[in-house]
Image (cartoon, rainbow, N blue to C red; front, side, top):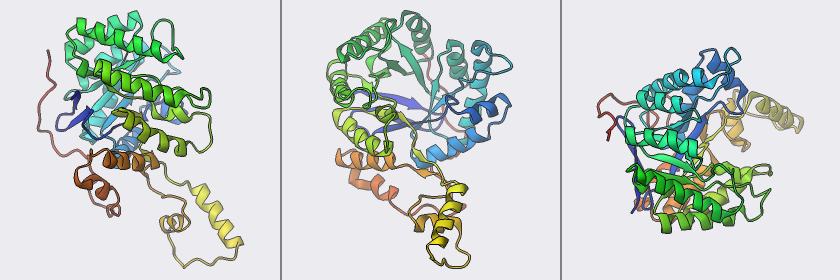
Length: 354
């Protein structure tokens, strides 16, 4: 069975055909998050800290770290991104003990992350583009780390799944030329939005099966891409993920956290309740209120997709005796109790190098 080993200094995550589905938390990424981008440029890492802790508490086995901010003061990412990547990685691995995924389109930022990262991180990513292959594969070999391989090349992203398979095969073969084994390649076959391409789900399921059977590689994807532009995205994602798991997909880069109910939503709901003549118990706190009315929680918690993934793990016999499913469905920890995945110590080994 193909197994991709990703390590922090004290903890190991295994992506594999016979393993529970591996969730790679995507939240530490300023793309499309103006507030986070502004904070990072100002040297404020408070949101990064919150996102790291919340994702691990929700069940992420690996955290993706992306430092792709275009600074207003200096728009050249080749200068700004490497030191920022290093700083974020040092911060995150001081907070949580899960392995990291170093995510950048800037080769110098990838190497800065590799130098700062303890253990054996996952590198994100290489494509079939010639320039990218020449820059990234030597880093993968030098630092002896696994890498995400995205199925596009110099011609762009093809809608033809046979072309995307051919690109993945090319990357695996080029990696082999560097002595990089197939078990250290995690292929992203590129999930297309179902709203733009009706066969997108069927395509990716067939692709994942081919990648597993013909190339023997693990797979990942940006899980939320499938529902882009459609209503009730959680409903689509919750169906897609177990189907992808059954097809053989072994990981996904996704948000494991359901965001807290905002104070604005609570205020509006309370006004609605009062207008309906409903009298609430005196002193009811906001958390009790939102749970009573099925609004969610005032605290970050595991998202609905995590429930679907854990159920799929149970049904695929990758959750021995249902232990993880039972643990997941227990009441949340009381305030002050340690969350799983917090930093426990500094013992461990450095990254293995070739």
